[in-house]
Length: 471
Image 1 (cartoon, rainbow, N blue to C red):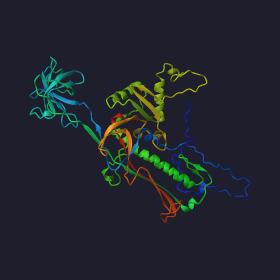
Image 2 (image 1 turned 180 degrees about the horizontal axis):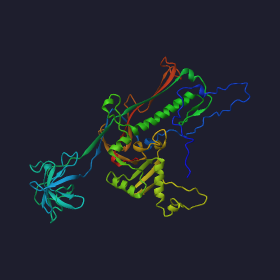
Image 3 (image 1 turned 90 degrees about the vertical axis):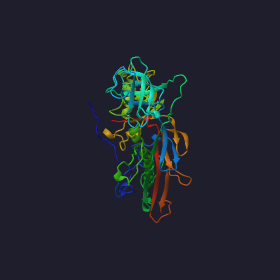
Image 4 (image 1 turned 90 degrees about the horizontal axis):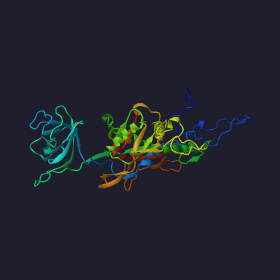
């Protein structure tokens, strides 16, 4: 079996030097030599487009913020279900199968008050058998009995409680209510549940400096950069590459940022909650390799059904994950195993065989696109193990949240960047020149320094709708 050899590899430090050096210029000027070297005038772009920024521009938006703390509220569930509930007999002790009534106590983590009221009808299940019952008293309406996290029910079924309560864990949810004629109304009301989140912007800076003397020295090769800058001066290339790197960092910082949880280093930096951090902690995580079968994608779809159920989703992925999806979809074709066809076409002998897919629909629409950040060997490309990310599923569209700055509900993309700005100071993308060279005349420094600054944070709304795919 053939194996890909290690040469040529890739340069992990492809950037230009900080200043123009003798190695950047022709030094063989022995005019007694009959043969002078031929040089190409233009620099060859062997790595193509080297920038990796574009992700947030595709899926998000930018908007100003005038505070160093960004807060928003996300809707809670409309209905409540308790999944860690124990049963006891009325009056205490174990409750036996067939009991006409029972007391259920909620032990779900973080629950300090229950949203079950007298007169409501509930479904009770231990995962195997279930009952339907009506609530006769509850701690919700501050009755003397039962306790604040407990409620008493009377079963509808003639057989009573379907299983002995000892050692059982039940789940309970409300499906309605029932009242006798001539009775009073519902006691108490349930308040809307909101979940509040916040994030802090971070300040990003960079600088490019070149001395006045080096600016006066002309290079021997024409250089270009990804944003169209060109010229024969090395400092021009380096300045533009610094700008391009800073542009990339504006995006990758929003992806990778983490809060400063180490109290020993709290005085050094505050940190921020980047996209990967939020999805890892509040979103859905797929680990153990890429999902490569429809059954595995059905597991993902089942989880999405339990979340926001966003109709359209985009998967930003590395090359290997993209090929895995292509192979999975190709295998659905009855001729795929023989390698004769992918997709639907006329099999013209002159046509190029398209072995890739742009997406698929199975309950939801899933579109896929290669994410250069996950492929670039100078960034996350090539990382394996706990540090690897193979893809990120992002819901398309926008969602409604309560914006505390505006003081009202607002439509926001699921991913968007907030930057510090006011009427007098805009810190979205600041750049200025200092020194006494290159047109600057505001310092006695014999150099040109180009300063870059931004202050921003990313808001990941509805993280429960995101999926991160990891090894």
